[in-house]
Length: 425
Image (tube, rainbow, N blue to C red):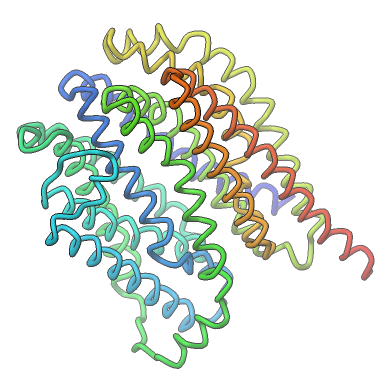
């Protein structure tokens, strides 16, 4: 009972902080949608899409090994490796701009070196922050995580309001710069409050070699899997931008952000604690992990189904009222994406399970399949003259079905470990 209460308390701490952080963004959105245009949000979605894709592989996924490592010096050296590789990716991204090349061009966006600088800075801040979050999970510093996310949301919103004047330089720059500043401030908070006085050993290159060998599966399989997972989530922004234009992408981005971010934050709150609990129990108490896995999925389904049905019904009118009449289109997109959102609510909190049980190859195969099905389907719909609405509906169905199969794969993996454990006993 004590373990269960501790698990719930940790989730509540994260949920409270993350909910407040998300509430700040939601409250500010009706004002931002009236001072920025849909095309600005389209460009901003390209930035966040590129950031998510780069972030998925910049650290080689080695930060996932931080909660698994018991030796302090090993933990710090994993952080060293992750931060170094993040820095390399940032430098490479900036170097492209000196040759008039930019990742923004993939989205058909005319950009400047400033946007590439903001992207590299945002990646540096977000990447290091991600590494430190896994360290904080290892140390059970969940309140620190919530405080940092709350600070990020506040500084993000204030910056985006303040930087509307720089938006004339290039569309969406105010939104992009505000996001980058928010990430930088939250990182500075964690560093000052939790890491400034921590012991940082000198770099031991032999230890680095040992750790790269020890956790090579994270670099070999998890990096590709995480990259493809992120790409399958972000590819829709690239496709919509290239095939249907920035305005459609802006409407889709608003729908995705307004509904998807709360789902992600709630899911991440549960997932963070679930990850820590599974790491502690999977070897000695797989039956407990299986029970926890089923319990989370069942309870989230019971809460998510009625909520998403109601949301799909009222979304068009709600978006038009809150964000302005032209944004009712985003509400229509929410209705089309309801199935995907529902599956995200249920599965995202336990979606890391295949990494923890050492099934990286299975995860990689799942990610490849999801990416191919979603991308090829949208391209076929456009080629046949289908509308953006048809493409979005297909994407929703494809993503929702993939989450269902991921949950099934996770259940089978834990059940297999539990069965082996019972046979040993």
